[in-house]
Length: 110
Image (cartoon, rainbow, N blue to C red; front, side):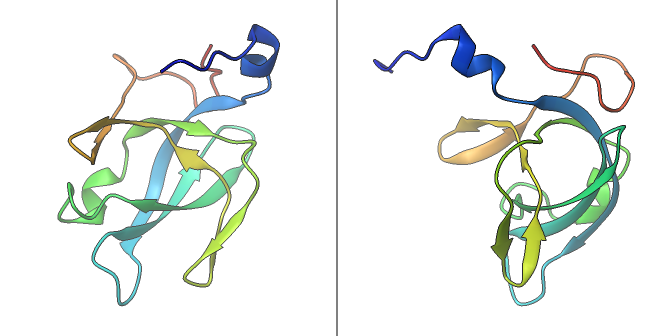
């Protein structure tokens, strides 16, 4: 990692904690899940490639996760994804990040 960004650029990212309220596998895919996430101010639909590390998408229901909320929407397999779950990468596979305790949906990550 040799590219730095300014603190001003970092502040442009709107990262908030959201709770997964619904989860299902995207039809005809092995990796993709369609998630409904409550981010406090609204509910968003996200498409996430978690199928390699989570067998049943229903296991995500109730989990709190950091969500990049101001990412440009993208249509994936006919579903408009309105944000991105932030996860660590270990060996090319996502590892989910969670608050250490339950906090309010929409809490800002700084």
